[in-house]
Length: 403
Image 1 (cartoon, one colour):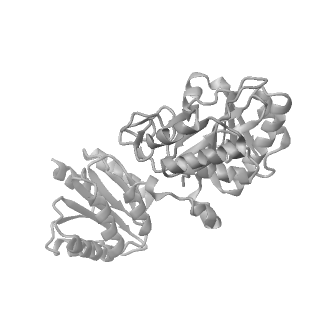
Image 2: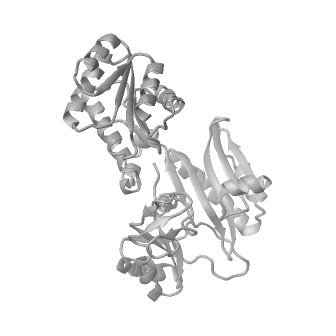
Image 3: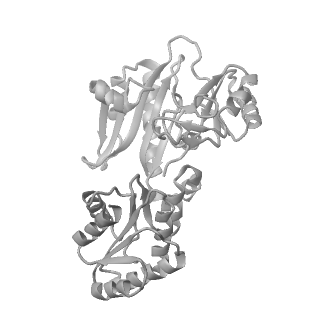
């Protein structure tokens, strides 16, 4: 589960991670009020107005309606409202959102932390994530803060620092010091970075996160270490332990079809193809998507109805798939192990009758327990549904439907 920058910063702050202070706002008037409060709390007279969406690249992204950037600087209190207005309600397009962009419902009004002082501010990159190949967490850091880490990895891989954490003993003091040393820090800034890494790692572990990315981490002109941005991904499998974190979910940032699928316990991911597929089991779903491609089509979605498919889940899956205007055919591929094929077949027929007005080919391949009975139910239903026993036969029928 992704959360917004302002939510991520509040989470980090609870663990003692120093952050760029900010207040979230829904309207231009609220933005002005937030700026006044920040001025009183921090003394800042310049304000950063930051669009809050679940995507990176906001500073370089453009709001379609106003051509404003997603992150802008207001050099006075009077500039805050018009700059917030140019972002709020608009569609922000970044390299991560795709051409369709994302609607901005909130902005974060943040303090200016790039103030003059004894030294120049310096940006760093820092993240914590699970290295699945090694089976342990890894801290990644770089002196090239503010840049996409993919670009750094491709162009200057020697500038990426990696420190793996043994899960049996956790983060050790020498490891945090090693990272700070390799970043070239010294004195007060070195000590602050060590504390920052410790606190960040504690927050990462306690929240059952799958990724923390702070880009940039800023060394201010007076040697403070701050999180200027924060991207946090929480592991869905651990959310049952964190009821407070579940409340941070913003479904307006998610695909509506995926949200609807979640209500029925379906695993759904929308893709860009023309053949909708409904399968029970993730492995079978991947194989079905391969078959669709081999037959000349492109999968329009990944949809796993699980091992207990029934009329309700099948109907829900149908409705979700058919909301996609690009779908030209539907392939239902069910292996009857836990669930009997004839129950699924009855569910398909029931769902078909309830939905009605289905004008695209539907191929149903049922294999396993009571597969022959299931094929008979489909064939005798009188509906425009084609049954198949072998996967190759199903693929051929998909090909015929698209031709």
